[in-house]
Image (cartoon, rainbow, N blue to C red; front, side, top):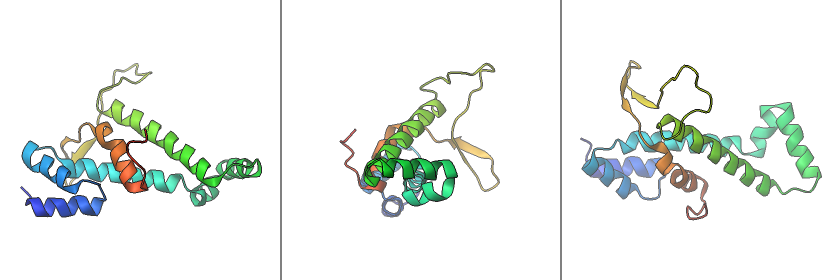
Length: 151
C-alpha cells in the first residue's frame, strides 16, 4: 500500500480539492481512489479543452460557424463556454452512470454489459473503476474553479 503522504501528493497533483480525504478513503476503505481521480481528471481536462473557443475554431467548420453565429447575435463567449461545460458535464454524467450499471442504455438489443476498467501494463483488466459518477461534478469543479455547490 502506498504511504499516506505519498497518496496525498498524488491527489494534490491531480488537483482535487480534498487530497487528504481522497487519500484517507483509499487507505482506510480500500477504494482505488487514485484510479477514480485519474480518470475523472482526464475527463475534466477533456471538457476544459473541448469547451474552449480555440477548440471550436479548429475542431470542425460547423462548430466554428455555430460559434461565430452566436457571437454575431450578441452572445457572450463565457456564456457559450458555460453552456458547453454544462452540456459536456451532463453527457459524461449519463455515460458514467451507464458504465456503473446505475442506468440502462436506451437501446441495447444484445443486452451488452460493460464498465470502466483499470488495466495493467499489458492491457489486462485488473479491476473495475467504480462509481465515477459520484465524484464527477466535484472533480470538474476542482479543475475548472467552479463552486461545487452550484449544481
